[in-house]
Amino acid sequence: MSTNENTNTATPAMNRSVGMPGHMKIIFVVLLAVLIALPFMVYPVFAMKVMCFALFACAFNLLLGFGGLLSFGHAAYFGMASYVCAHAAKVWGLTPELAILAGTVTAALLGLLIGSLAIRRQGIYFAMVTLAFAQMVYFFALQAEFTGGEDGIQTVPRNDLLGLFPMGDDIVFYFFVLFVTFGGILFIYRITHSPFGQVLKAIRENEPRAISLGYHVNRYKLTVFVLSATFAGLAGATKSQVFHLASLTDVHWSMSGEVVLMTLLGGMGTVLGPIVGAVIVVTMQNYLAYLGAWVTVIQGCIFVIGVLMFREGIIGVLSKIFKKPL
Amino acid sequence: MFELLGIPPQVLLGQLLIGLINGSFYAVLSLGLAVIFGLLNIINFAHGAQYMMGAFVAWMLLNYGGIGYWPALLLAPVIVGIIGIALERVLIARLYKLDHLYGLLLTFGLALIIQGLFRNYYGVSGLPYQIPSALQGGQNLGFMFLPNYRGWVIVASVIVCFGTWFMIEKTRLGANLRAATENPELVGAFGINVPRMITLTYGFGVALAAFAGVLAAPIYSVNPNMGADLIIVVFAVVVIGGMGSIMGSILTGFGLGVIEGLTRVFYPEGSAVVIFVIMAIVLMIKPEGLFGKSA
Image (tube, rainbow over the protein chains, first blue to last red):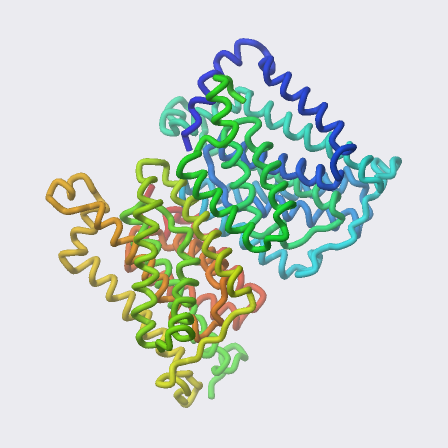
């Protein structure tokens, strides 16, 4: 999808000065300050949920916004990582960081497996293939022994971090989640602003030309797919530790749809868009939960309005106003 | 009676029949997707929701209007098709100049809205729909019992599929349609109203989905979620077959239904995923699909 040229035109200028441009440094520092204060203002579990979904949406945006690949099956990596992490913590008794690592590695391997097949098709077919494979993972989660079927994995313990620090208190655990998710988002930012990210952009804008310049396009596509799946897994695994739960909701296709919605709403191909989108969608679900199925209708309406009139997303519009990539 | 690999023929043929019925729905739905994709270049994610609407409209005609199965078999696709035409005119037509993925996102949003609305008013428990009196009972074929209605579903699907194939491949209207798929500008230059043709094609594809929905209503209960999971399997069917050929969609649909039925006999645990496994194999060997054009 190539609607965000406007946000990318400034990249050569960014490359001249080494590292992050000044305004992004300020934004990230302010964001970090807000996040440090957040658990003392809102319910920490809610804040952690938002942060996990922000990382999930950033991981998805890495693939869609920078790789130009629309996956409709990212719930597979998010959900499987959450199951494996929950299993590792509950049955194997692993500490949080190792359990999350186990989940993340699982997502990476699953991404490698599905990605190597899915990149054989492009565009609409790519979306359908990823959706179909994610549905296969869903059926696996429904039938496999260790996932607990309809019940999921419940009462997942939160063991001591590194075997030393108790994590039972939500505020304490919040700072661990902050470290993981904020670190993940910075890492994704680093990937997109590396030479690798520049090649990805070139492939997205003009694949035949990238091939003619000698780039192994499929290798780049597979790498970004696996990276995206890995960070989606990191988000899913962390979420299962936050909620002490891994369930079918996390692998269902509607979860894949939600992460598309967050990215579209916030602005695909922008750095901050997925974060903003995740905050809005999760907050909306939280406060409108009493409306039941109307939430689905509202989400559908946002999709329709977003696609018809608002394709740049919130951050895309803001970055046009401020004439700076955000 | 003979036994095959220790499986009684009644079980085998029974599952084969269920496979053929599932295959009928796969065929009609993937046919609709292929027709729409051919001309509009979008994947209609709302196809499952429109299939569900077909079943619901039949149910509403019966319960609110006293209109029975046979008129509903014609009326429901027409009504849902007209709703589809309105959606195409008002919303989808705005996207033709953009990346095709936006069409997918838009129709995904439409599917969420439609399913959410029906879930609000009718819940998720499912509503019963009676088999029409003319098709109750069944035939004893000697080796198995064939319920009349199930036989009818297969016959009706085959007729509709081949009727569509005939119309597109053998008539003048179909020739115009195929020409517009190849080169809409040139066909427009010959004085054919291409935008109207696109609108009617979308309406027709949607009507096919609704027709499948009416056929399904007496077999499965009428449920707001009935199309959501089915459409994902149909996507896999479409990837396996490739959308280049009408006959290809039909054959792939029926064929995969039968394979799924056979899997249920020999390896029941695998029946839910066998189509996805076949998709993986096809992607490895012939990524453009069995009947697809390359690239």
